[in-house]
Image (cartoon, one colour):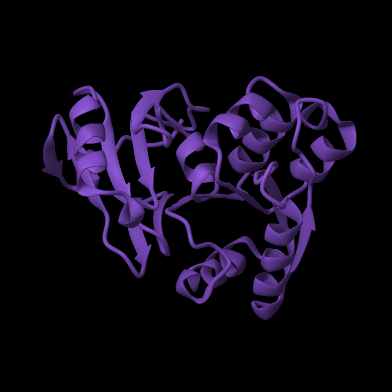
Amino acid sequence: MTGPLVLIGGGEFTEGCAFDAGFIAASGTTEVVLLATGWAYENPGRAVETARAWFAGLGVSVREVPVYTRIDALDHDNVAAIEGASFIYLTGTSPMHIKSVLKDTPVFDAILKAWRNGAVLAGSNAGADVLCDPMVDTRGGAFTLGLGIASGVAVIARSNQWSPDKVRRTIDLASSNIVLVELPEHTALIYEDSGWRVEGKGAVVTHRDGKSVCLDELPAPN
């Protein structure tokens, strides 16, 4: 039985993401395991400290697992920390870097193992993008291979920050077998046993073959 899969549009660790409290309660955890991989070149320490302050306010601690390079993703201590986690949080601004670090590594295998054993797996911004397949290359809005936990789903993370023209281009580039989700900041797209649902401040818009569809069209994660 997999745990919840939580795809967040961005704006993590701020007041708009009150839904985090529900996942803490659901997991029963006292510690969130954080991979700030996608911040590797943009002061990851600042993101980690922001996460610590945010989750302290929710009554739990943060354990940073420092996975910023392929070598880090092979480290036995990092693997062990993730395998024992009840709540894993993946964040950053570069989906391409996250994929290059995690794909086909023991750390990614550990993430999958923990999630399939019931852990909450949350990805925000690039962390949400990369968990899908395909993922959106945020540099231009086209599609490329993601890590594939949510296969057949792609998200435009921070869609509220995109221009209408860029959003439209990505919609037009999507193939007919993809459900594309506009996912704004402070908004979570969540898969649990009962299917997909949305929490947070924003509204998601889902597309297939250029047309708006309902959440029921999204396939279940792998």
